[in-house]
Length: 491
Ligand SMILES: [Zn+2]
Image (tube, rainbow, N blue to C red; front, side):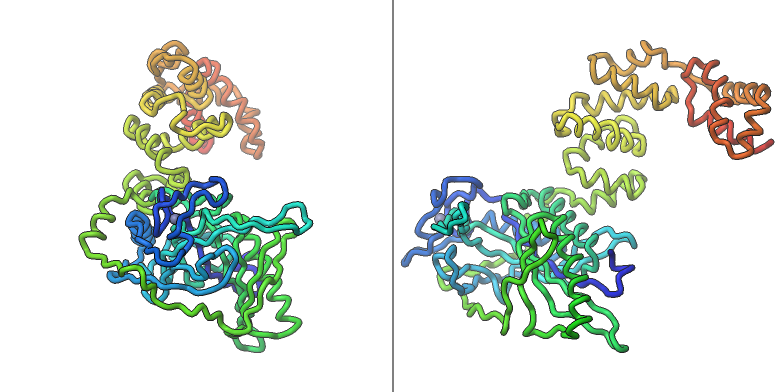
């Protein structure tokens, strides 16, 4: 199901919480390390004891600014902090320090790739807040006890709120994949969903025509879905469920009928956990213990200068400067900065972007997957691979033969030149020679020509055979095929 074929339009706004990659918490020096013994990384500040004063972690603010700039947001010059008051067992202070009416950034966008081309998803705001603790419930099922682990309390989070510009499950996936790639490349967050450093809430409803007017179903907020695939499924499920629900009850969206649900992945369905009878009132008020943050141009410029190339900029450069197709540019970029830098070193040696891209995304990737290694562990340096590819180009070596040479490159210390010489691949065929061989083959194969003309493509082999024999299998097959097609077309 997608937005094109469904009888309705899916409308999704996402709230993404990412944990910033700081060593210490947002307002104290406690560690943010994952997996420490429960309650070992806490202090009077993050527990909100009376009389203590929080102090903002400047690094957290800078990482948030990096993300905001990467998301094309305007960074607010004057940022204040607010207390969001609510009671929950894993929130010992009974309030969370967040940002209410003056978030640190707003109105940006993230560009995603869709089946219909690129699309800008608007970002309403990105703001900083501290995380709450975590409830540990009795796993025996007897309900004997619940424990609270406050190690996570006070960990810096960036909440990124999108406009409801996302219109299909596929776009949900594209948006989350891009956010994760972007924030990892910027070293803003590791975005590990399994460790809770990327959490997603999806606000979903559907629009469609009903009795000649456009109607919208009540919004369902699906909370804390724990994988990108699960968010995609949850959105598609909710859309269909809401459409069917409307057919039964004809209830339309209103501010009062938004509900909160959770996604049950094993059963592939949502379940309502809360009905908001009225808009939630968190009684925000300004945090009295923290000073406002004043951001000036010099600070923003310093952050901007320290940012690496964005994935979107890299994709653009690969297409515009290196002339790669969109598919290659997307695939290479999605593999991360280290892989791209390997590819660029291969390219520097060959000056052939497509050839370098093909080898990196096929042979190299396959070996990395088979051996479960990263590009930094890959045994052949980009310079050696580049020198082999230069030989491949120089002698027009076909794929089968270049794989043989590549295998020797992997298993020996020999240089690309030595390997190519040893395998006897250092021969060149000029086009006139190859055309002469093709014409000879055609002259002796009237039956095969007839078969090819009749649409039996297997008969091509009979025409290629003599050329391969004459060149001892070293002929550049692409070129031979091309010449063969040209000559066949004349008959
Ligand atoms: Zn602390």
